[in-house]
Length: 316
View 1: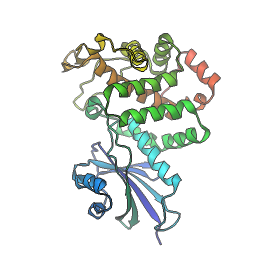
View 2: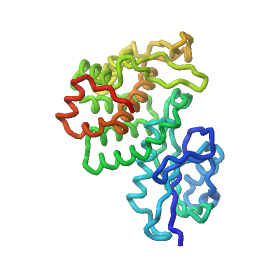
View 3: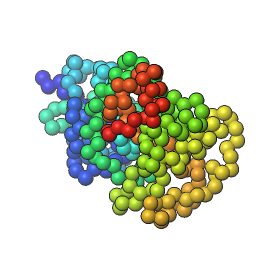
View 4: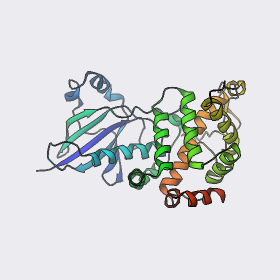
């Protein structure tokens, strides 16, 4: 008997093709062959979510061999699917619906076995408009492996930063999202003051590195890493320490493109920092999880040495 099972999680990403195989049983598909109507009676809230299934652009899927036909999902299988979702968001923060479906595979057909709630993840305005390099999604299996290892051996800088990242994506409060993502950057930079935060992040990412990817039409926000590092730290300090947020963060500065045109006229500095914190955190986590930096981050002395030396530019 075929014991193959499949995890399905709905995404908010549009693909140019019906399916992208990422390796290790992980793929992204537009329309998996599942009869979702069978799930509507299992949980009224989840069923209500699935009624709008036609709106879901595509699904993250993880195919694996079940230990027991029709038996319970194994923790290890569940975590691979969870880490795959985290890795995908780090590479392309497009958000995800808060539903997880487990199916039994019968030939080309997927029969639902269980449904549960997953992370309801939300990106930012620019993360939904940005065009992502789909070729980079092939890093997902490596990132899954490294996330699993980081949890297993308790690499706190990685585990805590990823937890802060997910909690931010799960929050509806923009100010808290910026705080959490900046705290994660702070933890990765091991910064104890504004000067260290700025110099170490600029070393890791590159001082003049563009923060944001371009849109499909080629429009790209003009901001580079050094434009926002000091403001991010100041904003984090005010919110984290319970001080009133300074008026300068509420000033409308616009959201401008490299061409000099205005993308959004009424963006405040606070809104720019929310966008920047997300994409800068993604940038650091991508470097850590896809390059040799992962071999250094587990050891305090080695990671501190790397940060003090300017971060050491690496190619992901």
